Image (tube, rainbow, N blue to C red; front, side, top):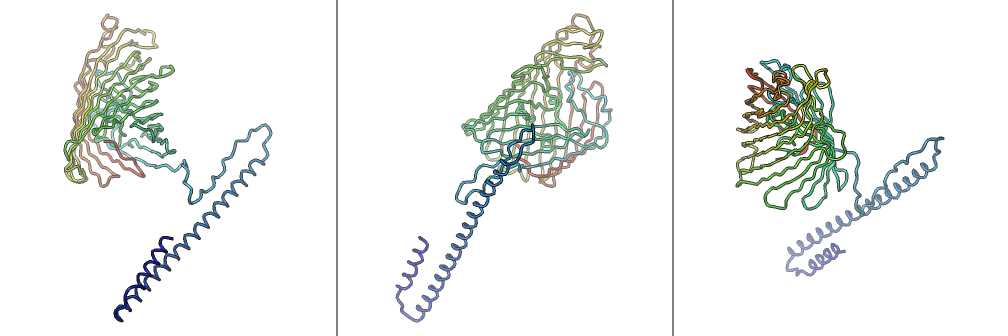
Length: 479
């Protein structure tokens, strides 16, 4: 062996050295003793490795024998009369030490839990909350109830399935003791050329904030535009394809095909695609300390009797819905290191056009229907500054515009606009100021002050105290 040859060469060189004096002879003896110790040590380690190899081979042989015996006993087991017996999976034999280990899909996922809670002090009755001028989405949420309440908690399990696929399941645990599926999807891991596919239920890449879980938001609640146009967040059931361009800059384009049941659409009992989302995101660094990302998205879907309540009566909209979203974010941190101080500026602009039929008092004795069309918009702009480690402050302004709405039954005089008080024109707005403290990357405490003007003539002064705690392994958040 090579190491034995090296040792022999070293010994020969040592013996061949001239012995000029007694001191040299003593030094040579010490060198020979050290070489002998090294040789003995290597031989002992080689023997130990050979013994471990033999034990591993014996264990492999025993495991294979046990597997064959188990398979034989299963095959010989009697089958109950009239009942089909399912095949029983046998334990896989342990691989030899020299063999490559096969892919494993043992259920050993990363598990994380997000615990959240809030205390709200509200000057107006939250039961009267509404976004004036907008057809209710059912996901406005508003400021929540007064006093202490359990926030939405999340339980996430994620794991690689095999070299080709990974999966994730996230449960949302509501304060009203309800459990819902936030996300449940599989996605590819090994596609080439920057392509990635996802299938199941997922947070859409529409806009910027929509793809983020609520516990990563910089404020307690979602912007008014998300509540009015997406019912909080858009989570389609379908498939998504993303392509990352091979450029020095970040360029991502994608398309999503969904069943269309998520607001602003509804379930329509149809085959195939019910909603389509396309998006593009572009980003890059600006020097060593700053970076940006901008995006443009479009959602096309439809509604069939999308119900809402107004003035004590049930109404419904059926027709087409188109939503455009433009988003942008700028981040700054000295030399790209955000641990000490950093700054973030982000905003999104929404514009939605809907056209179809509006049925008033649907299902009632005085039911009537007529044409309906609307073009509405909204936006928010927020900034967050980390002024010292663990401490941040933020400011956000939201604004909506109910825009132009053409209601056929009102235009032809069949009913007055007073029959649809929630659709009277208005521009809801809100201003929010927040401070938060993060003792570690796993915990955050937040104070938020807001003045909400979502209804005419009413200002709701709001105080929120929030905690967010993260337990377990949690994936890194996107840019």
